[in-house]
Amino acid sequence: MKIKIVLTALICLSMFNSCSLQNNELEILDEVFNEREYIEDFNVKLLDNKSDTLPVAKRVLLANSPAFKGYAYATIRPFENKLILVATRFVSPSDWKGGEIIMMESLDGGITWSKEKAIQENIGLIQTAAPSLISVNETLMLFFLVKNSSSQCHVYFKKSFDKGYSWTEPVKVSSVEGYNIINNDRCIVVNDRIIVPVAFTPEIHHYYQKQGIFCYYSDDYGKSWKRSSSIATTIPLMEPGIVHLGGAELLMVIRSNKGKILFSRSFDRGINWTIPVSTNINSPEAPSTIAKLPEDSTLILIWNNNPATGLSKRNPLTMAFSKDKGYTWTNPFMIEYLKNSDFAYSSICFDSQKCHVTYTQIPYSSEFKQNVKYFNIEIETMKNLSRNPY
Image (cartoon, rainbow, N blue to C red; front, side, top):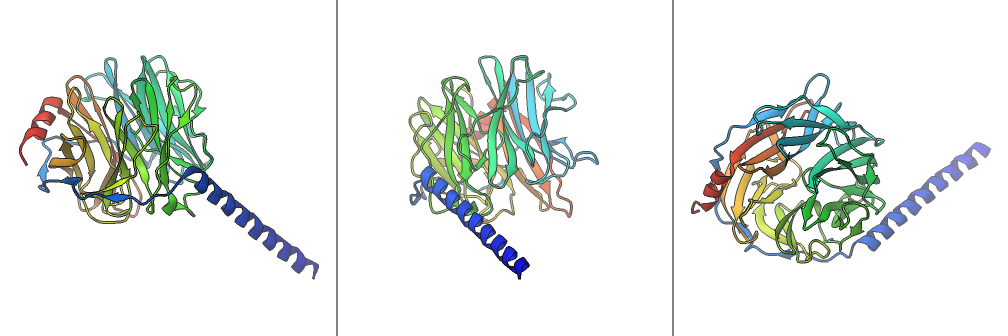
């Protein structure tokens, strides 16, 4: 009888703690997000759906091996006289297995690369992943995720003052307790303001459909951080990316699960954001990457031009251009398509002559393995491709 009473008490206590936790999570959602209906604008669209192949040679830069089962989420940046690439290295590739961050360098514009070296060990209970790399005042800043549980994932950063040879200790950026999510190649600098776009939910398994977006931003090079206005709607908003359009204007590209890309805009350098707009640009539930050609107003979008909903069918990987701040997109080119692979989590950067692109290849197989692929293309070639009439 006593055992039965104790078991009943334990069950009641467990149920009470579970209900209390869920109430706290709902309070966080109410505090962080003011849910509003998104807008559908079918005039924001891809004007042509041809599938010419981008004239580049692609190669695997980081391949899985017996020691390391996968690489993903790379970011590439020019810094002084070299290219620096950072990526996540997995012992067992999964969103819920161990990961750390490695770095490679190229001194010849991406032709050859140094051996990889670990620059951030796993300091999370689960993994450390998803690096973004920026440079501010001759200082490198590495941003990344530290994941401890499905309700505790935070953004950290650290600095290097000697071209990536040594790094400071990690410092926490995110102030909202819960599941903060950034992708690779997402942090940007706009007129000395560092902006970190984040998707957030208090608990990713229970509240996956409640994901919304805000930005952390710093005007003092990372000494302090503030939080922007939030974006939330009736569908989950995920994995935001930002491009600076000029002045105080920014464009955010957003992953969703409705088979379309969403956009939001800011006119005050990322403090406030418009209600998200569902475009007529097809996409599965996958991230997109957006950038702007140097000394040019032409935008580049890399995404999966595929109307399938859900997490699968992240192919083909496509590139298109916009000359009107992202309202219409033209001249799509297929970067890569394979029936037995997904392609996602791309990064884009520019040096004085070339555009450098990385992306993750996820082959369909019984073993979950990932590779990082790379190519570069002359900036002038990119400009010519964007000018061709559709």
